[in-house]
Length: 355
Ligand code: PMP
Image (cartoon, rainbow, N blue to C red; front, side, top):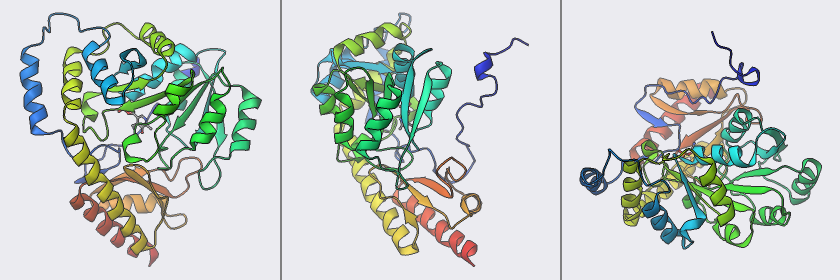
């Protein structure tokens, strides 16, 4: 057999178990499908596409629509196949051998994974026990390691907490590091760093169609940032990486802001529903700015609680074996019915475990 790169050989990759259940609340997608109007308009648009030709390489129309949405210049937008690919392109261009990326743990595992694959040295700073960050500690950690790339995630996955804009701004005063704020869940939060990307030449913000836009299956994400950085990413990525169907679908989705707003409203109500359910059941959780909530099982019972929920056909993310997240599970907000099913299963499972 051909041998893999030594530094990757023992590496398992990214895992999120896909179990066959009735209620899937484990991967933070939208609980609603895209609107029937979007689907029928996309079908019609596909008939007009010249699929024998390569797509528009820099997705001009889609970039213009995104620029309009965010009130930025089209040259300030890079597009990729999901924001995971945005992260990957960033580390291909700004990471790599001899360079360092900094993360604040616990956070989205993909930063560490892409750092590994691109041979970027990873510098992990620990959050405090409530998963917050303290300005002095962050600045100290930065001065100690001088990373080339810094990953913030706001709201942070898996904690659901916002990052502190003052800490991001303080770091951005250093001209060298490229600072990314991953806003995959930005619409659910009250703070957005898009204004910081306009203010600082080294700040970029990534976003996705996978959550509130109900299009995780489409694989579409993008980055907003200074033109020079965006141009470097377009130069780094493979040619024609955004296919014509995806470009058309993205433009159509952006023309349906009302549908997105309705989904957002439904999820915000559902988040309140689950948090109230947690209060009633006296479950410890972290108040979320996102479409998922991190909560804690009774001591030492994380795996058991996860299994007891699966036994009731409800799947949540089991984080209890992850570093720093002992006994923690993460639930994605679903439809009202799915949230009810989850809370009922949780109540039964806790009664069983506590008895
Ligand atoms: N960033 C964060 C913080 C996420 O949680 C996710 C999805 N799990 C992504 C990025 C990836 O999203 P996409 O589907 O756009 O690749």
